[in-house]
Image (cartoon, rainbow, N blue to C red):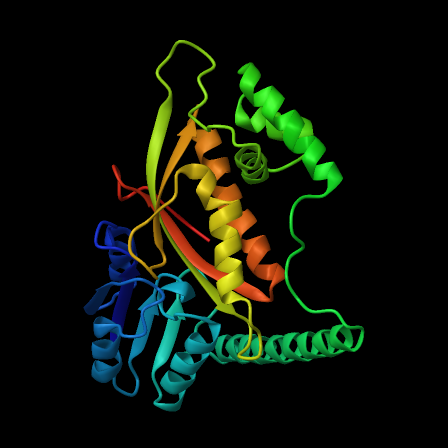
Length: 298
């Protein structure tokens, strides 16, 4: 028997696309979850795992719909294989009902474990070497002379009002997030860019962003989040929904659909780079508050 599992991160998002695809695969029973990827407790997933029996096949849209993290995904799939329950992902090369699919997943799991071990070893070796030289971690305070020059140039170009944020960033060979960081450093008020007399477009975005560490020996989640909030999200009118929550409301000015897509992609890319520098990784998605079906994922 084929069982379908679909998940969206918020109640505003629509799971119909996933459900329709699962039905086409012949799923006779559906389990639909509306929960953030960071939540440990998933009611529908627990019901699915209790309902599934030997010989059944669980069908999912993508692997990231099933697992909270790579480690959790490997644990869930390993448990299914031990119980004789198959797993098929429609958008990943994983189908544990076939010998080839099981081989792919085993390689996938082994590489994940190998990556965690290598990161841990490199991190511990780097920390030991740094301490031996009397150095401790942490970001250097303030800006370099080169960054100060670019911040001054950014302020001048922005105040002239002749170029948009993307054009200024391209001229200075920096990202738009860095541009906003420089403008805040120069205490420049940031507003929507208006090149013509047309009304500027602004989109309200709700962003869920979870910082994960690559291994239990890595410490950098809190610092990564602080840097992401200060250097990336604050440039878009960041409003944190609740204290200690991982959801934010952003206000993104844009001129056209392509610029909007590029801006959101840049937010994910800049945030991911910050997390990667501290041996962490991100899970996240975003959706338009006025149109919940318009979504973006890391």
